[in-house]
Length: 134
Image 1: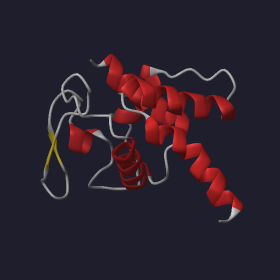
Image 2: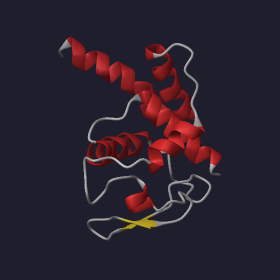
Image 3: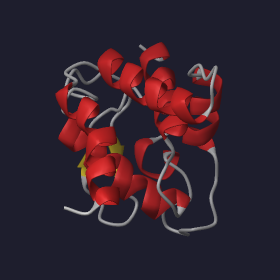
């Protein structure tokens, strides 16, 4: 196995064992703190990311395009029309409990909406915002 791949797997592996939104938040916060000493997750930054408009996709310019302005409400995919459950853990107990799903959806949504991978800090901020919406 090549060294960069091994390092990436080691960085991701702690998140693979989380079982609660708080554990995922702690994992992403710790990763962000390694890159930005003193990092603390911010619900305000998470809300800004959730509501920001990005130029990458006309159909999905913001999280709110599919998830509505209220993360506790169900949404609908802007392109496919597929129903989407609420994002806030208090409204949907399954949210942020399966690390593999969290990794999948952050990857997919960040690249489709933001136009790039989200940083660990952005993920921590996003989850902090979702937890404070509870």
